[in-house]
Structure formats: C-alpha cells, structure tokens
Amino acid sequence: MLQSQEYVGLLIGAARRSLRHAVQERVTPLRLNPPQFWMLLAVADMSGCSLGELARRQRIDPPAASRIVAALVRRGLVRFELDPGDRRRSRLSLSRRGSELVRKLRPIAGDLRARLVSGMDAAEETALRESLRKVIRNLQGPPMARLEAFDRAPPAARAGGVRGRRR
Image (cartoon, rainbow, N blue to C red; front, side):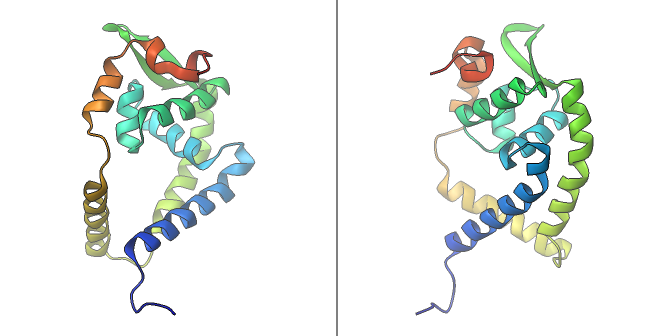
C-alpha cells in the first residue's frame, strides 16, 4: 500500500540515483565515473587547493576524495605539487590532459545542472538548496575539524593511493 506522502529520504535517494545515472550516461564514453567527473571539475574550479579543501567543497570525506584523486592522478589528469609556502601541504591542479578534458566536461555539467532545476523558478531553486542544506546539517557526521586536521597531516599520511601507496 502506498502512503499518501513519500518519505523525504526515499525521494533524495531517487534523485541521487537519477543524477548518477544521467552523469554516467554522459561520461562513460570519456572513461570517467560520476565522482571523477565532479572531482575533475572541482579541481579545475579550485586550482591550487589542498585535498582537504577539495573534500570539503565536494562534501565528501578525505579518504574518499583521496581515492578519487588518486585515480585521476594515475590517468595523468591531475597533479599533486608541494605548496611552496608550506612544504607539508600538497596542492592539486589539472595537467594539460586534464584541462583538455575539462573543456569537454563543462558543457555536460552545465546541461546536467540546468536539467536538475528545470521547471523551477528562482525561489523554488533557492528553497530546494536551503532545504537540502538543512537535511545535510540534520544528518551531519563527523565535524569539519576532522577535515582541517587532514589538511595539516604530512603528505605521506594523507596521500593514500595518490602517491602509489596501498593500504
């Protein structure tokens, strides 16, 4: 028997799966998966950021960010460089190949973002964002301090598979 209202969590899950499927359709021919697609775009937007900064922006935990970035580094799309101002920190940037690929990805991302809010006016889009942020805050896991500590850790300790180490 169907309830008169669907659970919010069910709708969020269905929306997530729909978005993942839409991204997958578009990026599989480019040999990317959805997390790599979004991460590559984020590195392009935040060139010179640390892994922790990238994880915060993408709202994922540092180990997940490290695994995704490691795959992009292995493919020669992203580079890790030591921060000249603080040699304990690494900074991320796109390689030439990564920049070329991002030029192809931007129109895909623009189309997907437009499809997400198609049929909504500005007020509805704003309300959706605010509601989703509230849901995230309501369910928030570990505090952001964990991400900040990750940023301060020695590169070898946070790189995981990025520099070839396996755990």
